[in-house]
Amino acid sequence: MALVSLVPGAAMADSIKGRLGVTGKVGFIVPSDNEAEFGFGTNHTDTGLVVGGGLLYGIDDHFAAELDVTNSSFDSEIGDFDITDISFGGQYRFTNMRDRRLVPYLGAGLDIISSDFDSDFGGRRHVDTTLGVHLSGGLDYFVEKHVALTAEAKVVLAPDADITDDGFHSGSYDPTNFSTTFGVRFFFN
Image (cartoon, rainbow, N blue to C red):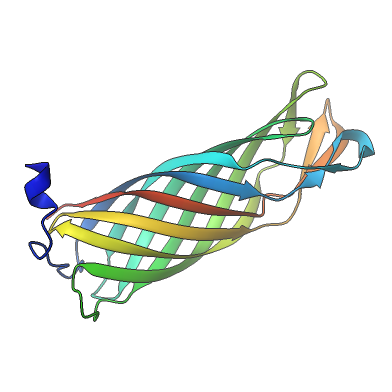
């Protein structure tokens, strides 16, 4: 059954106007470096894993509203970060392509970024929640009317958040990042 659904030419990207889609995705995040604890210098970060999902609602043939929730984790020189990003935004979808199964899109929106930091020096540090904005671009490839494979690149820009230890400022976290994800969208109705 799965092989039949992947046969080229069997699917067309119908309008998503009035349709609700659910997305699941996984990928990689490249976080910004940040200020190390108690002024020890730059805290270099490693590429990490991002997983998440969301909802997409077609307003008309080209515009869609989206809600995305992702969780990412990555290591740094002095500890581990765990980030939850709640993203509200919109997409402009290019539906007039020659291959009707392929739908590129551009997106933008607002992000609420909640972070946790486990220091190598012991204990969990408090990191302030911050607001940011994102720009994204991606592709949906419809393998059948209700199922699309998706790939997306996203940049999140946000101001630094304070890291505190028992109420004392111990550093700053820069939530600015770049991520790439791959997933599946299922459209109802």
